[in-house]
Image (cartoon, rainbow, N blue to C red; front, side):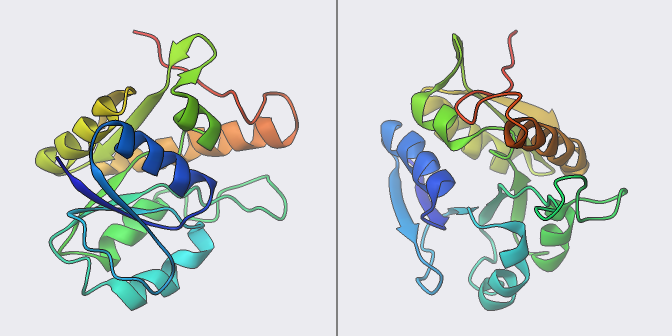
Length: 188
């Protein structure tokens, strides 16, 4: 079983904690200043909070699997991402944490679909991007033990596409074209 630390106790942090707990994993929900003791650390904070978090915690995250769930959306206009078109928020995090195994996941799901385990009639799917296969396997095991599907979408450079998909889903929900309790489903 994995020891999962989730930095951020908002809706997404709580939903991810419920998935990990359902799977029998040890979970700690942490505030801003509490130390992360898990081997798997989920950064469940807004993209705008990342620079301070990374500066404060970079040393303590060395050697750990670090999961970025953020969507770098311009929340003032809801019309664009706030990172360069040839990069991603996750690439920026990976550059700041060269001694960690950084993954992108959970950003294409809403908290409600994680907690419920379904998107409509379909099992919720968590898309995972990263360069370390063992790290991706660890996260996939946590996700599947919690009753969800996990799909490895490839290397960390796929984070850009995941962030674009997350942005589209947020924009659709923000304009009330889809529900915040719905979203995209992956059917295989």
